[in-house]
Amino acid sequence: MVLAAVFLLPCCVFFVGAPSGNAQTVLPADVPAVTRYADAPLALVKERARDGEDAAELELGLRYVLGSDGVRNVPAGVKWIGMAAKKGMPQAEHEFGSLYLMGVGVPQSDALAVQWFRKAAIQGYAPSQTAMGFAYENGAGVPRNPEKAAYWFDKAASQGNGIAEESVEGGM
Image (cartoon, rainbow, N blue to C red; front, side, top):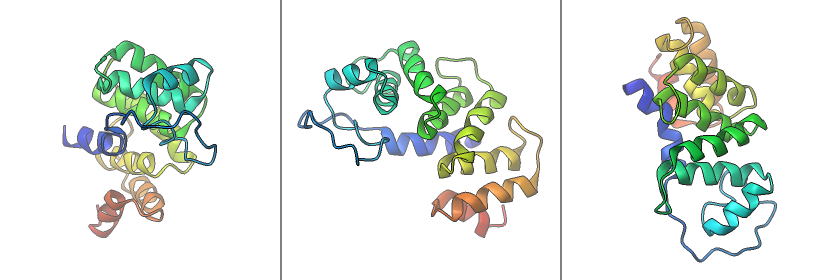
């Protein structure tokens, strides 16, 4: 269970938070995708998700899974997060992997979690690189392999990921 909490921590810390209701309806394109809709009204997020925008799909899915707009709908959340993940969005791939790791709305599967974490890790997403490090360190979904664990922890630590840095400094 500790391993699962470490995998899920980056998404919870990053995405929890209710929309303020004071968001602008015009969203600049240079805002990072992962935060573009964090404060947007639900109606705008739904509209953009239906238009196929991956950042909106991810945000809508997270809101449904977490119930942050007073509407908790885990199956719909899984659907929207999965749509963004299948488009290759690293943050969505990580969140989809986290759902499999925790068994939220999908059958629990370390192997499927690792498949999704790996997709995001290869694209350079530090939380997924850290997740891969823990997977190899603990043999969760992959065979235990200290060398591969160190590789992924080093990749994430080089981007300033604190959890990975602690693992590297502690010698795993």
